[in-house]
Image 1 (tube, rainbow, N blue to C red):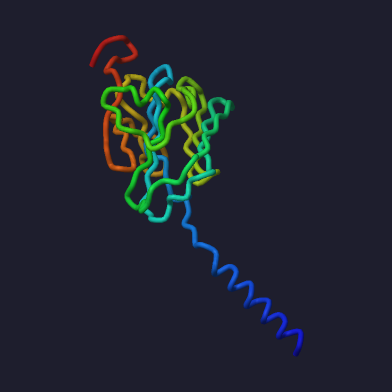
Image 2: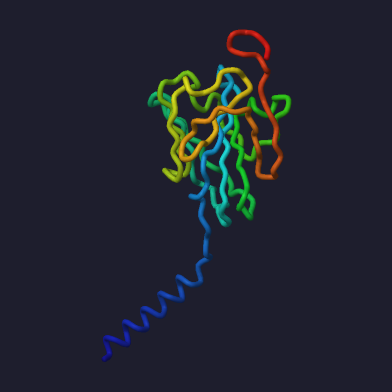
Length: 184
């Protein structure tokens, strides 16, 4: 009997300790919904979206880009604002902010290019596998205006770029010069 009461007391103490810990939401319900790159990779953005709340706990998590095996990593320095349901996160290269029509990104990558737009195999991995998108550089539009957008589970739809930040501000980047040198 004495042994059982010791177990019960230990269990009660453990339950109180765990109950006193803050209940953290998560970060894993963000999806990669849009990727843009200029032909030279100096202007790039990755846009994430979530339909769930409590996904603001990004600090310390990563987004990686592998270009034919060359991996670059960005670690989120802070959490996002909340609530997160129905919001977007805009992660962009330093050159993005200087673009006419660009909105303020939520996070700025450390360098450009973050991924090689000419690579045969590009893998963008958000949150250590929370969402992974694979595509080739040939799939990326090179006209300076369009981006690769999510269509179902993959990035496969080419459409005009619409970088949208957490505040809901939407812009459009690009110079309107196609890779053949002619304006649109």
